[in-house]
Image 1 (cartoon, one colour):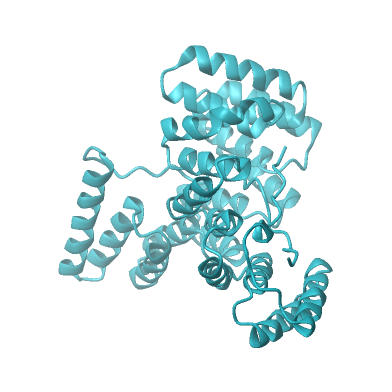
Image 2 (cartoon, rainbow, N blue to C red; image 1 turned 30 degrees about the vertical axis):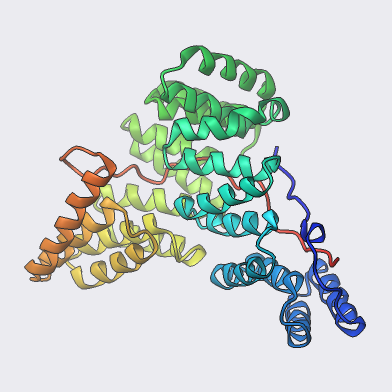
Length: 390
């Protein structure tokens, strides 16, 4: 289902052949990276760069290493250094965009995928990821423009077909949406993943009973399918059945303890039921898995506000805004926290920021929406692979 990552095209561009000793060090470091021996690999690439500071391959592989080990800032910096040396290599731009994508910084990723496609319009991976970024930003026409040319190659890809059918629906193109949905149905058959996506589609459409039916089928076929129990819990919550929702969120956590969304949705449910301390514990568990989850930071802040701990809430909201500066929800909550702290001028500044963002996004005045943590099911279509030397 997932697209395979393209190999580096560094060899297509002229570079000086490194000295023999540098070449041997480079080969050894790449072998260590491929074997998962990251300390040895990192040391080796730095040794190469001491001898050859213009080694784009060394910088690129350092970026791969840092991306694999979760050091995304260091990864982007290394990829940027590689791109400065070989600016016409589209693969490096794809890697930079992919680093932003993994962080769900979709707006930041788009220019890199667009740059890669300007350099090589045949790069299916860049086009795929570009379309998914546009989809996550609710830019449905742009998503269709990027993804539609890939249809012949992606007819068996449920993620792709779901995104394309959904985008057509949002653009009020029912014929194209139905045609693509039929492809989605044919590709999915009676599989757990098909029922998961169909349940997600019904949730998006607000059809909770139909969603529950499909998600029941998904978990019956595969009780450990990621997000299935979580979305079933959302369906029960929307049906006004919080106890059954809580049970499903707990099953999601038990089946997939390394996924933070189960903790987040359980925390949101606990908070709605007045169980503030339990909600705080759930959000903290989610943040232990991924400290950059802005929805978890926002949920934790809401729970802290419920306990009249506005100082902690403001601190967590500032952390979230540093990650997602254009979030209406975060600025809205921060204004509330600052008001509680007796800082009216700072609160007013945050309220003005909310108004500015509404205008910039073309949103009407009114209550700031909170869409919760329902997963998009749109995962990165590639991962990082070691880059061979010339």
